[in-house]
Image (cartoon, rainbow, N blue to C red):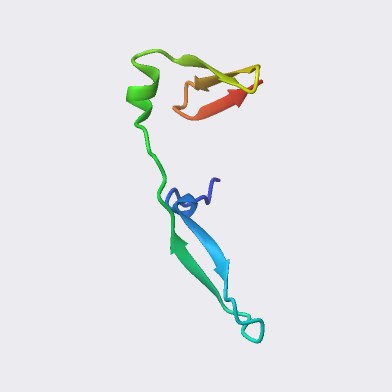
Length: 69
């Protein structure tokens, strides 16, 4: 079972500058978001070139995403 909250990646944890305080706070991050429909354009697999290596991003039969090198 996947317990990942899709909104978790939109925040980063920042430590307080005061070293006497061990409190952490959530700070919103600007994240560019693309729809998978826009990215795949009706296909079930796309190639992503990253630092000279080719990665394949696939949509599984269950509708999940798999990234392979």
